[in-house]
Length: 391
Image 1 (cartoon, rainbow, N blue to C red):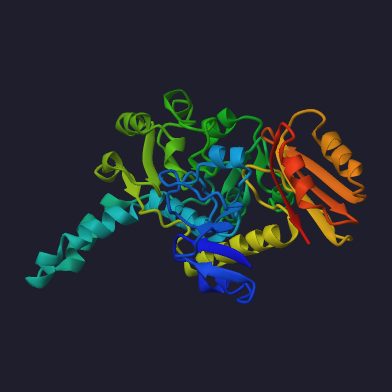
Image 2 (cartoon, helix red, strand yellow):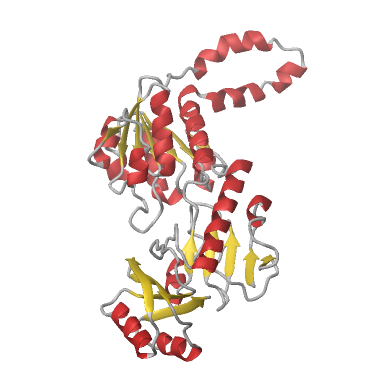
């Protein structure tokens, strides 16, 4: 039986995919094989030694100590694309909010409640003051999309359908994303090309050491004067002090973000949204289903898909026994593993080895069951992190 510990409310549509007879699932599960979570912070807790994988029902994973997990051979999954439509829709809403001063006008109307209750002439006040909230249409304007993954590509496609001239930049665009990108979306060679030529800029890149503060003063000063900036990826991608300075100088006219801070919520040129990007019932269900499927497939077959720290690795199973081994990506690891198996009379029928970020993962199918003593010997090979078998 496999044991799944849930650390947040996970949609029932996902949890129902775990067969009740073979899986124990719940927040109080001890010695879990998998931790299934959304936003729970794992940096401050001791992850049990039993854990083989952590599945995040969402795209971001900064609440998980990935480096620690890699050193222990714990595979960390996320669900890129499962909440893409939800984030895309909110980004499109932000495009309109950034242009038409909708938020300001609603706040102004709310301030007239006393006048309305006192019999004040609201229609007359509206006609008198509405010009204060005039803003441009987005059709015919240029939108720059930085990051053309699942979300960025959808934003680019739909913005083009709304009549915008869309230019995108992503040096790491996947084949899948490229196939799904509208032919009307122009490709920029550098992020500087996007910033210099866009009336609106929308950021859709993952947060990492490389992308932290990717938009600071030097990049912001390349933007068109009065440009509007949208950030529905991660707050740390944009240096807050620099964006506030750019708003004061008029370099940026509006900043809309899904990641509010004390310094941003009080700024009159910032529209803060309380991290609603993936807050739709559809997104929660999609993320839960995707996370559960990945965890279940990994436990039952050893296949890895959408891992942030180990390589994707798939092998069709045609033998009764399967060995799974993770190791540091150093020379002669596969040779040492296969030599040890051969010395014990274990015949290999198929194998695959992939590597990523300094780590490698092996799926090895055999005709014979591997004895416990040989598994112990495998674990002692320098560079091996973890081994397990599936029968």
